[in-house]
Image (cartoon, rainbow, N blue to C red; front, side, top):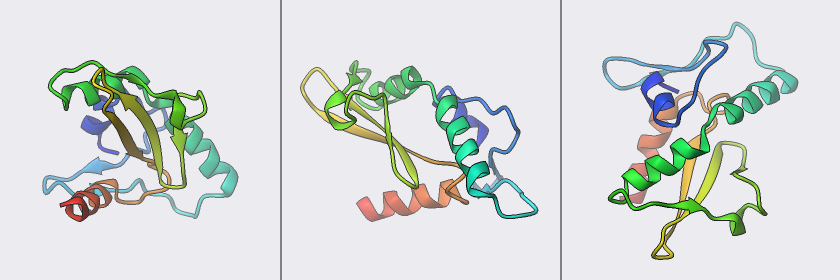
Length: 126
């Protein structure tokens, strides 16, 4: 994930493996000379999850809703801060007017080109 994207979510990188964005906007996946073992992938995913600041996620959602405050919606996650699948970690937020959003963040170790995936999803929604 690009450094500016990581900063938006309050994320830090402790191993230097985050993707970088080129001048054209395409992201470059971290290089690895060999396929990751399941254990290593799980370790990287766990580290990635731990690097996300939930408060930064809520600030970002609020920013995209005219600075309307939001809070975590626990009903979708069984009381946990987040839920995740194979490719995304999801935060469920609720605004005072009962509008609910899902903030999806691509899991960096699972997605080679995060930027291309995001562009594809936006194009699909349009």
